Image (cartoon, rainbow, N blue to C red; front, side, top):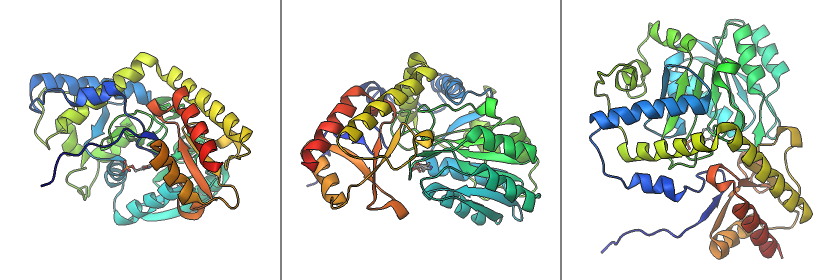
Length: 371
Ligand code: PLP
């Protein structure tokens, strides 16, 4: 007979999911309402307002897609692209590569602006790509590359897109709630995120926001969006501004209670205070790691405070260290990905995981495992 599943209490310090606070887990266990119950519809309105706060936007089309960050990514591409379009895609890690896949599956052409893993997106190279492909209708990039721990200059890239009359698609899966993100101030057009990183909510939901320019593009489409589920014109009827909500799909009701709770926590702390907390604990972690003789893989000016890439010292068995941390200390850190596999560890200090207790636990555990 198969019994119930009781996971151990891990400390999550990898690339996500991050630790989910008891307050958010508690929200999940509240009674399930019907998804068209007026009380739930009221909650949807509150979630929308809280997401507008977190994204720093007044965009009317702001909502949580009922699926993980990858679906938010896909929602942005399928709604803004049509076959034959040209898109400039900046890739400096795993997720830029996924954007290329999305572009091609929409029947559009991806012009790749490649930067080395561990480096930010080069604004000059993106500008040169526009000079060579002036017909490009979208510029897509990742604000916070989780695979490398690098922050790119989102404000400059969004401005570059506007200069060339193109829309920007911005991946903020790892940045939302952790570092400065100013959707309206930067003029970003289609922005998606995830709940399992700096929002410290359960995985499986993807907040998105679309600027009025992006909405105009969506509304003037000639081709049907290839995905029924992610077609924003249909989703708008469910999450839209009027009280007449039309059934589109059944929202993940309890997961949305959890998202609401995590956003209320962010609002109570204050966005800027949350960014400052991430920066403070990052500085403490780096000081501790350097005191142990370890070095960071990314130059200080581009480092993400919420995702710390650390060079694995020569002669150290990457996998053995990570399993010792997991098995002896119930502590998860991330392996390097792709070109950085075996070369770096990725230590997450995201959302509720960005706490003094976690920094001290990690430093003590790592010191003990490295001997
Ligand atoms: N983009 C970035 C930068 C990510 O870090 C992730 C997940 O780690 C994704 C997209 C995809 O999100 P999900 O795994 O929730 O589908």
